[in-house]
Amino acid sequence: MARLDRATALYPGSFDPVHNGHMDIILRARRVFGRVVVGVATNIEKRTMFSAEERVSMLRGATAGYRGVEVQAFDGLTVDFARRIGARVIVKGLRAMMDFEFELKMAAMNKRLEPDIETVFMMTSPEYAYLSSTLIREVSQFGGSVAGLVPPAVERRLRQVARSARKVSR
Ligand code: PNS
Image (cartoon, rainbow, N blue to C red; front, top):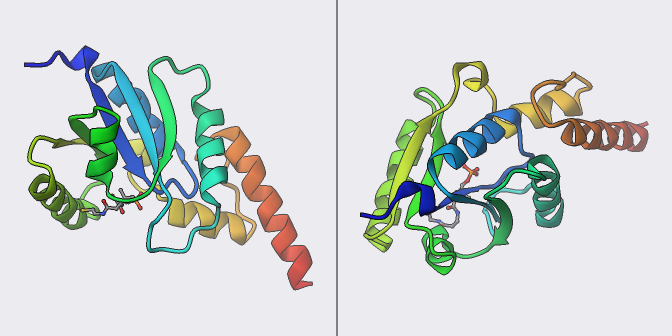
């Protein structure tokens, strides 16, 4: 049995943008696993607000100085990327009921694709249970404050985007 503190875990997502619920999972995963690779999916179906490069750069900024945490972009299947980086564990955050069905399907499909890789769920901390990148984008686009909900550099970038969108629509 591999020791968890020497194991690599992959935390995949779209991170559009990263918020404090994600940061909480990254920190907690790092307490369990020796190396946590945050995988930024680039070939996702949904249209993103931020380019892959920006999503990676915001995450790198937010996790700078976190020992044992790396941020990498990937395309293709999550399980293929997990195998390439030597991760036998995929970590996902679970927010109460809203994520369960979708995450269960993804975990089952990933297990079928790659039986040696386990998906491990961490319950989102209660203070972040309502947070999602979709809500963050929406609130900030309409001029609401997301201070304290995202890393400070992400908040600044969101404010910039909202300001330029307002200029364009004037
Ligand atoms: O943050 P998200 O949008 O919930 O992340 C979803 C993500 C990126 C983890 C998922 O869409 C994914 O794994 N995409 C990569 C392609 C893939 O492996 N698809 C099959 C999943 S069963």
